[in-house]
View 1 (cartoon, rainbow, N blue to C red):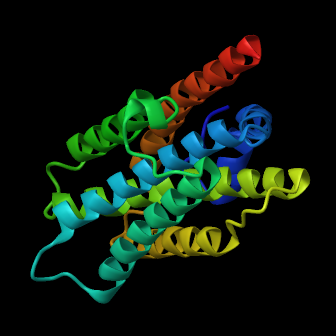
View 2: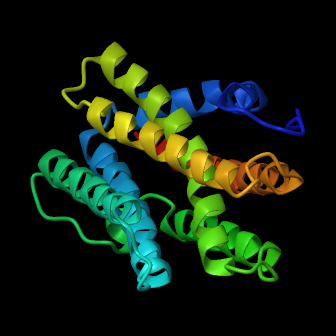
Length: 222
């Protein structure tokens, strides 16, 4: 399935429908194993930390406004939230090393390759760092809202004492903010959005395959 010319979140859900059941199956499996669940939560913490750090590194200019500072703070808080839950499930303090995460190389690759793709695409814009930040954030938030919604439904179905509802509301707010900022620049409906979403989907599928491989190995070892 391909994205239309002016993709909405509904289009994102439709285009990612083939992967929803696969992510749900992975989450159901990993949430049933406390140690594995801790490692997955720690991986999410690392990815949120990467996002927060990139905002700090690329948006710390004299024009830095409240909205961007708020986004920066909330992404850092999301990293803390997932880290705290990971340590709680593990009953110990986990680190951002390979032994304490699931598919960390692919998780990092997902973020870094998407960012490189976006940065290269907007390099000739008048404000390339700002444009890259807005596009990158919007594309990542599409995935976060989609994935965390599925994750919450799995947690509820399995009775796992973990709520993502507050975090999910903030991610939905970020998605709306980035879209509004791009619309103000006349860039939210450009063909770039479709290109970026297609690139993100390809990278996400590679990460999902690696996550599925982890649960397959765990099942075989049990």
